[in-house]
Length: 485
Ligand SMILES: *Cc1c(COP(=O)(O)O)cnc(C)c1O
Image (cartoon, rainbow, N blue to C red):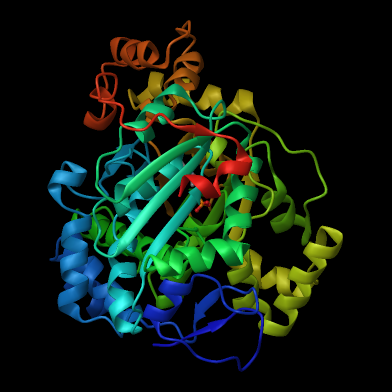
């Protein structure tokens, strides 16, 4: 299986190891598989008898053909172990008539773990496969969740170092403590006197700095990123849609062939794109419902065919979905329009902040996708509604999806899989206030209070955090970021 860029027709084909090592295509496009492997009824039936690790090994082997089955199995075993996930990697909870796919049982309690636990191992292997003599030096600018998930994923992975920058006053106390207490001999965490944009610009400046690059090369490293547009983060996300379908068939909730609708709380469009690829492989999925918060640019796009980022940016209680440029949408455009038109759209977005698709293209997109958004009040209301009615506690991002699933009524009456992307404890203050409770000033007190009110279990990694030893305390000015490497 080879990969091509979304922006240049007939561009050079690349191996999976190459695209995982490099991230972005040289023309600025994203890498996509040149064809989609198929998944027959017999394939799904044979997957039903397997555990998550074996399912992941099989599905990844269809896409990462230059990795051996043994390599993929070892990577999946290390990534999705019971020690890391405390049980099955992607369990399903029944909530009323719907199924909630819980993707947050990993070491940082957010769904980013599903990809960031395995991708570092794939990157480490890619160095050998591409004949790379230097080791990877990963730089991450984070506004919270990605930084911790990346640190945990890259921790003590062979031939990789990671350094994370976060805005000193721009993350919650829980997120700060999660990062500052990170274990591992190849990790470093530095806060900066500035906001997230300063951190991001600083990282970009380091990537572009010739002197920094050659100084690092002398020490035996090249710069790399843990960015969400890397195919190595997308491929592992296809696995849990197929795995969820298998589980529902195994439990007699679905008959093979029965269409399952899916609702995904969406930011960068990576998670829902993985569902689309699973559907293209032949998995019997129905509608893919794209759920947005008050930042409703994707809802507008799906309904009107206009992607217009010239709009107000809102900070919401579901911060991981506060985004105006959903990078992975470019991959969907490529599937529907091909490389020439995709490049035109991306150039238009860069130049004018907007692009428009014609009706034919939008009909193709709407055959697979529907889009809904919800307000802050609606997000909070559905958390308390679901808790009161079913005793099930969900986080603010999952709540946005639950609201969209409710707005979308399947004409065929398909069953609905709601994708749950974070533990409610990760966003304890907002969840507490949704339940009508007073919110303590200290985040750790909010955790304890949420437990006292709901009696839902606190994930072990968050429960032990208050007393975790702090290892990293350095704060630098944005201009000194290079000096901190
Ligand atoms: C990253 C994230 C999302 C958005 O996922 P995308 O793949 O960027 O669309 C949703 N919920 C949570 C909790 C996240 O961390």
